[in-house]
Image (cartoon, rainbow, N blue to C red; front, side):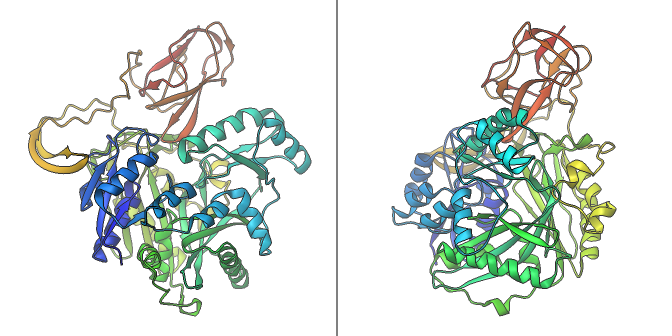
Length: 582
């Protein structure tokens, strides 16, 4: 087993890996950006090293900085978590070339399966087939249009080196192709460091089913049941379940065997997930995620298998201690992702800022995996996942009721969260009847009456207190107890001199006054208008990126643009007036 593991990630997954290491007697090494200097994963780790920078590109996607921390720490293994470098073959190779173990699949398998295009081809070689799509990297929007006209609309543009819904855009017609391709490429580059995309058919009412697999270095591979991840918004999951309900046992077996075949076909080792779309009794291969999934705890609760422990054991060369016949699914589990987003009206607007209070739920069959505690801050520069509530029940109905009970106990203040939407989903008759699909949240679920009470509407003015602060010596972090001012006010990167409109709301646009305001802190990635342009109600004025998601800020008044206060690349704060329509 390893002596020391560096976790090249942040948030709740870094915390999860640190805890698994501690249980196995393995030392843990955290890395952190300037904004994460006092983050929970840094506080919990045995050692922590500064990467520098604020954005993901400057820190957690900075290979040289991570390799520097690896050298300083002397760690003999690296766990990539998910997101960032978890599916980057070049990063895995840079680790292994230094004689350090990469806790994941070999670089060659990542190259095959991490690239969604070659992954489709690899799956077809073992007779596992996916949704009709192109295997060529898109070079222009005309290729999207040609595919849509040949195969029917809508189509999906997807990040070739991504997953989790990031860099995925649905194109309903030829008129949308250019803008949606550009948006997908921007998101893919921001989240995965690469902007290659491809296109495939977009099914109208599928369920998103995935199969968890484990494969060791001795030729053994098993599947650990299924998960249903159909409750999504923006193609990103809100609620996941294990096992997938209402699917015939024979079909479940076929999916599991197909997943193992795909893994063995590319000499895959460690934990991985093979995803399928299920519709009208048939299933289609979607992609393979060459990493641990966010929703892995749902599988852990119904199988009793600690997946992070298994990752560490497999990477250290141990064979699996169980076979397929040993895997038993007991009861039902539900995982609820708690994101810093305001779901009011179905907008799901990112809500960065300080968490002023956080009280997790407790009780039988209840688990809370989080990357933050009260006093921590959600930054606009990173993913907005606060934590995950996972519950277990003897059957699906019990699990749903337990999840609702636990959500009622969960208190998070200072920021808006997805909790109201989670409750609306779990209480809905369609969800209880298992009649929802990947489109259901956005097309059927009525969130017009949903409101959030967690967001702070006043500036923070807390007094000075005694707290732990950090100092760095040669890039290594140490904690020191000192009396210091506690500042929790969220200030946009680089500051802002833009006008602010009082009483900022969560709307994506402006009031009838003609002032176009941004609803949250973020970065301008596209400006669609110039001074003097004529706009109509609903026209997109700017595109704002916050927490790696793009948000359209639209005009709520028709007229002429008489002021424009931003350019691409500018940082803005919630409530900033970015344009005025006269």
